[in-house]
Length: 241
Image (cartoon, rainbow, N blue to C red):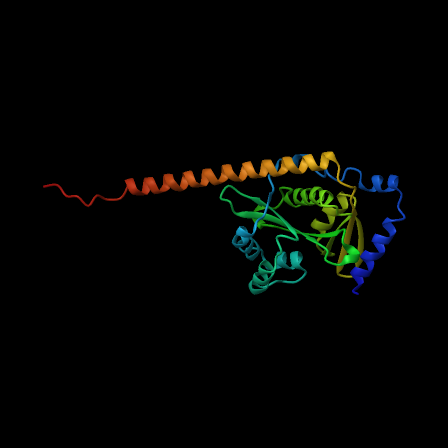
């Protein structure tokens, strides 16, 4: 058993000794880290978007790959990671721009260890051009809501200590931070699902679906218009007699 697994099991055991009032206090305000960022549509990523995931991750700079994976992942290692994604077990969420490029994504990985069946790990990456818009925070919020509705009791982030942006997001949500040299572990105890969390997720799904459909239609329209303009400007092969 590695040190983080031992630490996680210790946290799970301690949860059983925390009163309901204490847990509510520790998780108060969890679902709303930033009200403004709620307007960002987040779509659950399907297996058909694996190519978009590859494009997004391979566009990350070396230092960003290092922060996301804990090592400077090569293109080949990213290929392996994407091929190993289990869309039925885990959940992936993405933010798309007007060209339907994936500009930010989160991977919510559920533990396969029976002793940690109610745990999930959060990982996130944001394209360089999309930084500073609160996308990491919004994806974390989305993961919290989804985790609660899936029965997750503890959400954790295993990150490098130098990944201050991710650790700041977790800390703002009320997560406890444990540091061990170059590694850090953030853990957030989640309240159970309720009517509000389920309605919130349904609304998020509907908004994201509508947004993606509108962007798809707009992209198709502009592609059609471009083809039409190109056709109209082609020189005629007919000659006057």
